[in-house]
Length: 287
Ligand code: SF4
Image 1: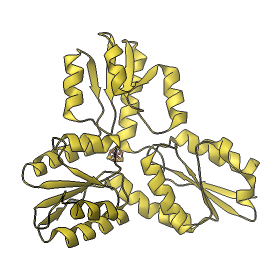
Image 2 (image 1 turned 45 degrees about the vertical axis):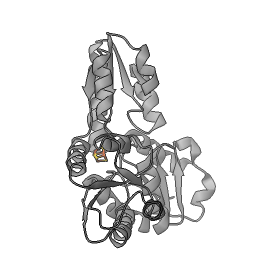
Image 3 (image 1 turned 90 degrees about the vertical axis):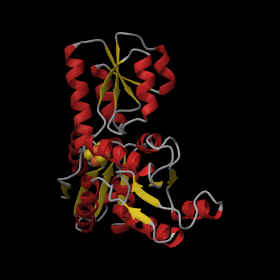
Image 4 (image 1 turned 30 degrees about the vertical axis):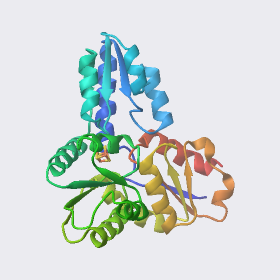
């Protein structure tokens, strides 16, 4: 019989819990429609659960179809200043669930942009990154890889000797950030300030997951396909334990993954609900 353990720190981070709890509180009062601007969490199963309670998801283009009885929820990733201006102009009610950690980062990025060139280590087009770039009036450079940074210097987008301040999207890998910071220091010269802006909850998960992945025969990583944090954490697990598999739900489990295994570890991203981890852990011994 295989033993199955759920990684105790896996599950929603504080920012996601806050946004979902706020949405559920609002919906329980029956005070008009609530629309999340973008998916409130990058997990399709949890979105379906909240959708049944009445939470709608809308994109920026859809905002023009909303009216006075609608409320728009800004999710934990945050938004650029122009989104707030647009919502206010349209007379829409706003529930701002920007994570306090992201709000602090937005403030720091805004201040840094007044004195230096800002570089953000993040996923190009990710909503949190768009919110950060918005604080700089669109002037920040976003780089996901050292190669993109080298191209920016080669193309004259960034210049050697220019004062630069580097920030990271909150859910990026600490190892990737260290590597990018080293490359930036080599290219830009001495006037580089590196801010430690990876969320503490994400950074500690890297350490905890490394130990967890090492001590189980098979790792099942549960996360939605669109979760950037899920992609980073899964690759981290797989680099430590090659028998790591990423799934979106218990229906994706394959019996062949567990051949000869005596232990399985179940873990997930900051956007993976605890109830889904429980469901997956219960299903494994039945395969
Ligand atoms: S990962 Fe950290 S910064 Fe991002 S929403 Fe969660 S708690 Fe906030």
